[in-house]
Image 1 (cartoon, one colour):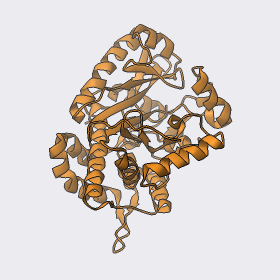
Image 2 (tube, helix red, strand yellow):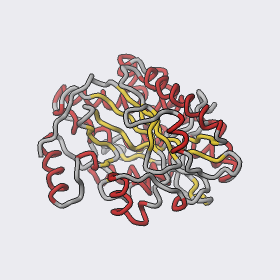
Image 3 (cartoon, helix red, strand yellow):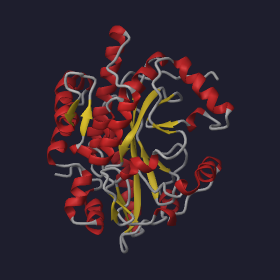
Length: 371
């Protein structure tokens, strides 16, 4: 299968922010998306869009040169949705999961794509009451798309650890900082990308999936980090949804800087720092389980493990020149503050249980910063 890749401006950035809709009176998820979307005049090209379930909406930015512009874009959409939802008695939360609503009780939208997801995934398809943050980074040539995809996956624990926001599942502390991550990987073409370096490998992989009936289009390849050929980007899908704009900007900046770092390294000598896929998988699990308290496995054989916060601090220093070039130094620096003061999962637990966590999320979502 020949898959066209539409090149885009190098290291340009776009954000997709999934938000859950909550009945303010009961605190439960509410299937208000049809009314909200209708009031927002939403359609397929709108920045305010439907998702799989009727209890969530997705805010999509345009393509921007800087993270601050992309965040401002989705913030403007958030303000529109918040006004509309408020008139319906509906609140918004940016979190990987709702702290106590039952996933299987949530109705979904119908349509060819969604019907396939529901039919193929059975019970797991009924557990997809989860929200994520997706960041697209522009790639100027398809030959870089797979190296950047694989290279970004190596940084999974940092990209996930800062965003973990789903410690509660149906009223119980799941023991994971990101319960969403554990649920999302159950779908058949989800999970970590396979380590590839050439576009021809990706096309051959897509051919195999088509031949076996696993997908009908390349867009159904839903890796945690994946090429998005239609947009000319690599899409980072590792992160939970987060409540505040500062956290959103931080994740976008870290993704943008890591992608540009891999791009520069690849240009220099056709290599990048890599880990064997079995260690990438272990790092993913550690970050989902322990969040910022995880120990990260590194390629450095002299010191195979470092505390996530320590490794993040080293990378933030290393990425400073890249961030200055890209105009996201302030957003990148916030990652250090977030690591020190607490990501959403720890703030939710500190609030004192699922009901208190929901109240915190309602208060934080859309705010400039959690601190």
